[in-house]
Length: 110
Image 1 (cartoon, rainbow, N blue to C red):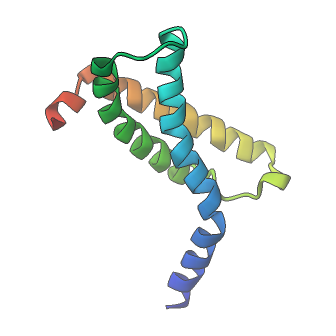
Image 2 (cartoon, rainbow, N blue to C red):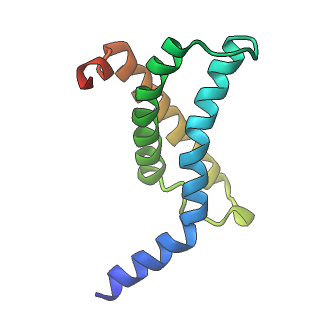
């Protein structure tokens, strides 16, 4: 019972950072599309096709951050090990995401 309470306390203390990361992923995704269209209006059909992969990205990135213990340290005291964990999680999530999109699996979900 106390381990569950400790986990909840740790999760609650890191919740703002996790929420920021989860919200930054779709923002970066849509910003990339906006830049691709030279800061002009993005066509509706492109937006319609760009939204489903965002959920896959959020899931993959969040799982990789958890797996590589990105949220373990406090940002004021980031060590080289923490920085390497962040780099590993980002690279691993990029490989998984590219593999997923190259297999075109997100069309199977619709």
